[in-house]
Image 1 (cartoon, rainbow, N blue to C red):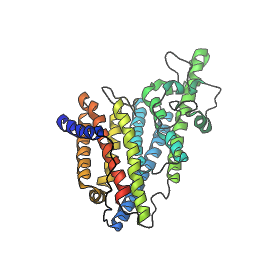
Image 2 (cartoon, rainbow, N blue to C red):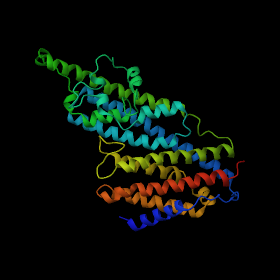
Image 3 (cartoon, rainbow, N blue to C red):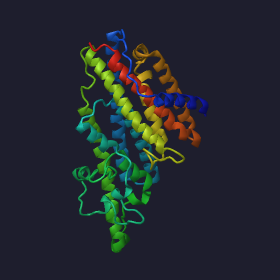
Image 4 (cartoon, one colour):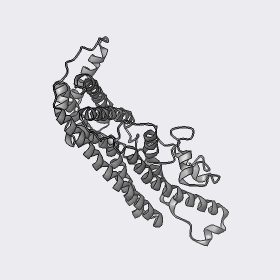
Length: 360
């Protein structure tokens, strides 16, 4: 662990927060190569496009793995499906950093694709509530339209679509829930006959969710088409500002996730036990969009070299802490502290880009 460094970072931030509010000094406009800003915007476009291609492949593979599992529901196909789900979800965490200004259509698509947490009883039965869930409500004829209408119908945790509805079904439900009854013995028993209907509806539900996930990611890409298209410096600067604002929003969500990933692997991907991996993927994606794949260093250094040095140091410490958090509860407990520091530093860059870079 690197607790002394973490304590230093946090103490500096807290010291800054405790000061009385003062009027921010007027900063001089930074001299900058406008062509460089245009080049960075173009690199952002290319990296986002690469992530979209990866996600398209992964969700298609996930749908194919779902179909193979439903055709042959056994342990091997279930394990393959679970691995495919994890790969596709990680691809989504990378691609989401390429979604810029979110209008209502994009927000709704994101909610359909990656809504969490999930109330399991809204989807299927529970030990204490054997008749609960959409799967057991035979008044609902399962279809994409019905699941879309049910998704978040009275509460955000009433999730019927997306990665985490699927995650619950393929990680938390037993394999037997998906094996169709094929012998006459089951048909002769009325109780087993009810089980037959549940299995068929559960299989149908899973197939619809997998297909809708492909459709919704495709729709998201269409809705985001052209967001990185630029013709001049002002448009490129606007893209850069939108990327930083988007990264800030995603970091705030990651902060929420880090508070849930404590002594147990709860949080974003609870049922698969991969919440910490999801958090790692999100931080890695942030680093790619700002440093490794899209080199914003020259711009951010020009704005404030000290702030950039602090940002890199905090990111380095956070990555180290994430590597240690697999088996270290203390490291997990300190994740929110470093994420809070990283948010603070990105907020500073966000303000500086607005006030210190020339608008034209």
